[in-house]
Length: 271
Image (cartoon, one colour):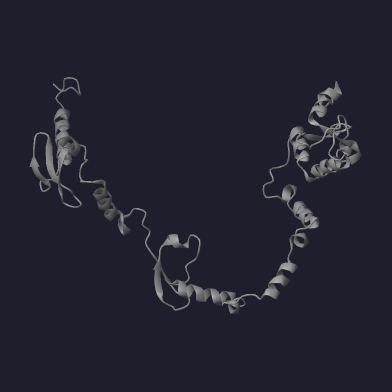
């Protein structure tokens, strides 16, 4: 009686037994490497260094214990993956040196950052000297002290980085000209946050603080003598109702955070 087909003799059970025996034969160790057998352990040879060591039969059945140490296992498998045996091996590329016309080979990974045009570093330096030409004559030389002073005077932070230069860059990278442009703010809150982070708002806020000498215009408190007071620039006429006066210095006043919290803002004005 067959348990698979419920009472019919179809031969499935015999095929199942044959498959079990085939698996058992695969899992057993080759006779050439088995030295002696005991009830508990088996003495076998390492596949890498051929040294004898003891191991349990259960480990062999699990296809484990083929090597006497982890170092032997790594050494054995590394030899099988080197070069063309590696599944990721792509072979070498044949090329001719532009300086000495010598044929050389290189791996595709070497062209990740630099194109291989020469066979060695010596030829590479010669090729660079040909490409540069004008700067090649200065190799091995140094600038004099006078020339260094002239170079330092010709370039300075104040001359090169000016407000006009910053404005040109900001205009060139504003709005749709910016590569990170995403279509602009889509809500009123996003528009307000964008304006408050702009250069115009920061300049207006600084100008209000300097005019009031960094002093609160209600309680007349300011930083100093071990005190730290957080100051804020307050719009006398509201930000929402008077958009034209948002960056007008006369429409601003300096208040500390406690006094600014007492001022009506936002929905409190429209109540």
